[in-house]
Image (cartoon, rainbow over all chains, first blue to last red; front, side, top):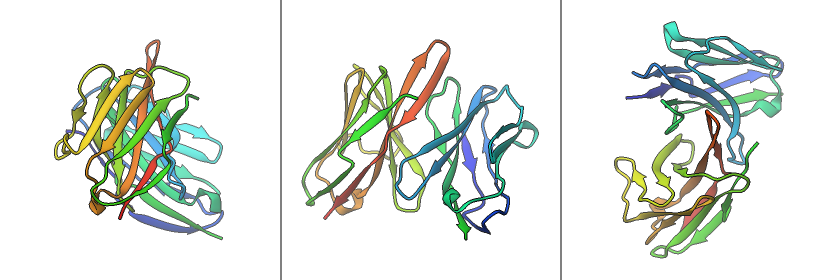
Length: 114
Length: 117
């Protein structure tokens, strides 16, 4: 069975600090997809990234970066120079095979303090 | 990117009534759509997979007679909460799967907040 664990329930950092959100996943499939979504207070999910299991390259997009390590089954997300607008709930998620059901972690609520 | 809409965005109803939520893919066809439920400060939980032209597949613990799903066309899936009760109050989110060549991507709708009084 697939499973996603986000051990950090809530994190608070001061603006401009870097912050890393952890994600550990479990799956028996060799082909799977990992996702990160942002959910601001409005509730609408904002897609951040999708990574397939065969691509272990780390990714950087502006202030966002992702570290995918199959050896530790982790897909961590780092925000550098955090801003107040980054405050939201962040979900890590997993789907197996051909992008079927997406299973979400419990989310990490991130507070960026001015 | 592709757009998925939901209607209504917010609904308040009395206990015992039925509520229908629509999920539409606006610029692509979706043979498969998914329905999620999110209680306050909790994660999204998959309720069911909606397949165009066939019966929905429900996740364990989800009552199919209470949450009726109809995927009547390639761009529309509806979720009807029958005989709603206050414990059904939640945020309902749909997603639609687009297949483009070898790539499959899911796009999420903006969600529907249901409050049952």
